[in-house]
Image (cartoon, rainbow, N blue to C red; front, side, top):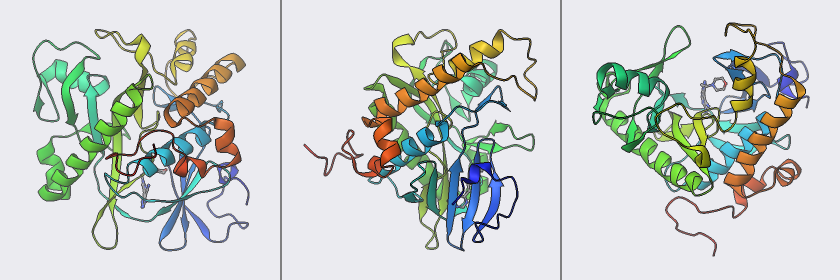
Length: 314
Ligand code: Q0N
């Protein structure tokens, strides 16, 4: 099968059973019959909300492998949509769900729109926070700060009361509990491997029986803020684990942060690719070459601990 990343048309005659359902900035979604989806992660990269014209080779494979690794290790916390990782390493077959109309954001540190909202109101999504916090400070405990996709395409923080109006109070309480538990597990695991997961976004759906299922791509640098722990200094913005070379390059050009973005020089591409691969290898304990040879290795290799600890290998 050709790599769907390179397909421009909505219908592909060589994939008669794969209808293009939608595009994110850097991913594509295809139907596989009525009950399954194909989620394809491209090598495109966005910065300052603009997709750049230069790809980062293997970025999509890194993110697909990392998300699959987390899905396999968080099954004790909640079920997820993953059915299989394909041999190309960049596509996953998923269960088709009915998605909830909220983004389930968890923040362990004060950054981005959380820091902006805190400075303006002392609150984030209805959580009153202690006075005197600095940018990038670790919060007393992780908080659930739901958001919606606004018409602009930008995410907009909403209060938990507003989120409850969208999905129902009981369902909201359930996704809040699951989101916090997933974040606590992953953030503790990543910190022990030198990566701070400052915040992260989950998307949930429900299956035919009405059960909550984790979907989308979870706990990757595209759906989270990853910071290098050894460079962490609160009181200022933190360097990005994955995109800092790209941001630094863009800042020293005359680019005004509107589309189209600049082409990236080869050195920035190579450095950024190396950072994605480093994050993958640190977190999974699996060499990226081994992943490319056998993508399903992320589902079974020891790599660390599973949520709950039950059944871990010695
Ligand atoms: C779905 N999105 C939003 C891919 C990601 N398992 C699922 N079942 C039904 N729908 C979805 C999923 C998933 N995952 C999720 N849209 C549909 C994010 N998309 C944006 C485009 O790229």
